[in-house]
Image (cartoon, rainbow, N blue to C red; front, top):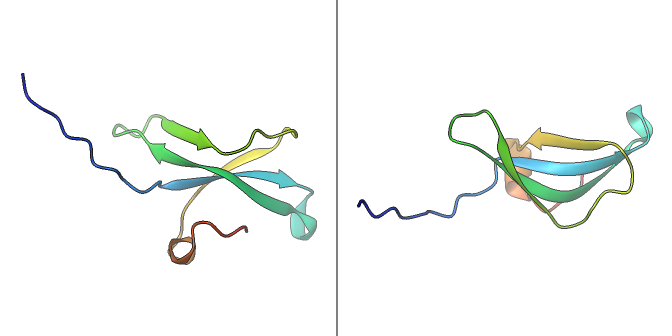
Length: 72
């Protein structure tokens, strides 16, 4: 049996609750996501559960890489 080692990888996406629309929208980061190796799904880790019905998963950009903990 081949021994597999798991590397801790940084998340590829942020998970946000969005309240409002357009320029008045408020984005609150509630978690992170890691894409599956085959690209057909993702694992989500949520630090809070949304009370509204709008959850957005966005790929991190270079700007986000500077501070992934910041709210958008």
